[in-house]
Length: 238
Length: 304
Image (tube, rainbow over all chains, first blue to last red):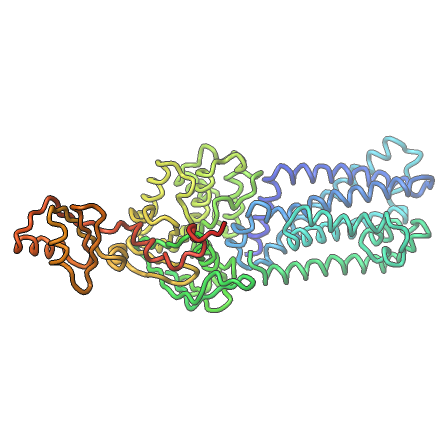
């Protein structure tokens, strides 16, 4: 049954022009992101550029994931979906796997492409993919974007409205980075946790968590959203 | 086979369905009638598990819908005309549903052909008319070839050809031995197809009867007499259980006596008749009489 749900969610993903376009944008963002990572070991403004690219890619991933979750409700697709699959948490699980999986596959492809592009365009300013800083950023990005995709789908299914879900997830991802007055709070929100995980050398005033703590925070946020969405889906009338 | 057992559903402090018990049998079209807002859609949503009953339970082929391993092969439902993403093609919508039950693309093409959407299956459903949306919804309901079909207002938005098509389809499905449960807020719409009708008003069961029985249970026939000696005939017919009215000098409307009775009384007393007809209530009249007390949003009671 669950493989059927996975296939169904995959059909849904690729049969919607907006989702495909969204993932194309994500792929472009990922290529840019991976290219900027390679300038990290050479210092300079590499970290700033990488952070901008990371934030943009994060938002694109969140946007596509949120629309995939909330999109079920906008036009009533949810009625068809949950009539076909009355075990509603399976639909949530299928969506999570398909969308997080798509992000990670795109990330792997983009990493290969980004590194090639960077090495060809600016061989002198490009560090080695094996540099510890690059490896750390790459590993952190896998966890970060995977979590953002999971968070986005869950928030989308929870709020059942694209506008509400977009506002919520942008609030969790962007607001913590913009608000500088309460670093002791914002450090625990996903936006700063992603930064701490991927680029630990952030601004001192942000009071970033240690990378391992940031990883736990992110996993906690994603897991919490999944559990809440699952519980609500089971209880709520469609 | 659908068994609704003591089901109530409450939204906030309002009861949408109240203590409803009924069985929908296979092999015939069962009409589900009620004014707007009487709880028809809520009941149908509970049949396929989209809404959970506050009390009671609904069984489809002996089990709760959600407990079936392959629910689409047990019951198919059309609940609202548009239940699909406007940006997705009709074919992709059905393929996504079919994938959950490992039904192949061949089955998708078969139901597309059955509802006459093959030519437009690649188009995005956002461009579909209401009638095409209804056809796609019916295709989705048929996808698992289920023995039970639950269709909420399936002829809504269809043109004349579409209405004829749906009626034929419903009869065919019932003739194949399936349980066909079809809602409508218009009696006339179902009179042509349904053999059995369930009527609800304000969420409560009002009638569960054959179409013929529905007419009989409502107000009886009226005998319409035209005679120059109206007042004399009126006095002769007067008695307990008989109501006599008539706005015109030579017209008498008699309720509670048969047309034969009235004719005989006139003959015995030598009263000449210029007209003697029986008026049976229409299905619509019967339906309105039954639900009159149960109409929640009666247009006549709207305060200004």
